Length: 436
Image (cartoon, rainbow, N blue to C red):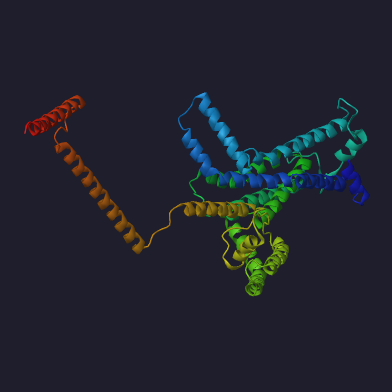
């Protein structure tokens, strides 16, 4: 009602034109309100596409496992994967779910208007909608057709108004679907893929469904449907220009356009920066000051070209300038958006980890170093062999000595026997000397 009051206030009248414009404005406001959900739907769909390889691996991992525990683990791992990617399989349903209550409410209002006008409604009013307002709406028309007539109840030549609106609705729906499949679908999409076939089939099926609904809808609902269809076409046109699907023809056109615009100023800018920094000493305060000052200026200009600036906090000004410089001199393969930023941050982490592993590994030796090491190893082996040979000879000498294999008791007996013999040899000498 407030929308209609505004329409009357601006001078469009309270009759047919006023209510038609009110329906159009209501539709546009609803569709504009769910644009954030639509953008979220697009990003969620892109996120689902990005994690498809991981989802397929997960499905292969649990293929054939039908027990409850395996199914629960698979579900938990899938939800963790969705959370990590910042997406959800249900996000794509939000815009449609939001619009459905509005359509049902519009149905209820239309039938309440008829009942209030005829005096058959159970209550005296439906909110601000009373009998007087209901009668005003009921007597309104669009190009001579009552807002509550259908194609079958419209007399004579006025049916052409219905035919015209149905043609507009079907045409814009077909253009929207065709624009999506030809410009916003990756060129490498497999035509035999069920999703691709389904989308191409919907390009013809949806307009056919709109023809059927147009035949049974009242004029008020048909105006709502025509407005939302035209809005969908304009919205799809905006998506192709601003948020195209990666890999699609529209995406490639946008990459080329933004690359050309960015490099037009960035190339000469970084040439001047290189000349200025070459005159300064490495890691000097003057160079660091120049880098900080240049980074502020680059970020200001790059922001206008939609270059993502959420660098990791650990990156220095020189690191960030290096990325901006690469964008100025290298061909772009993707848009420098949030996904691109995640990619280069992950690549930098992987590079640091690789460098750390290489630092822990022994360095590769030259030919002379390898020859010297081999010579030292050969000498070491020879010295060890000589030492083992000397030890073996020593053992052999020990084994060849008398009594080498005797027990301690036998050795002691022999020692005592040798001492006794020595005493006997000594005694005769002493006795003979005394007799003489």
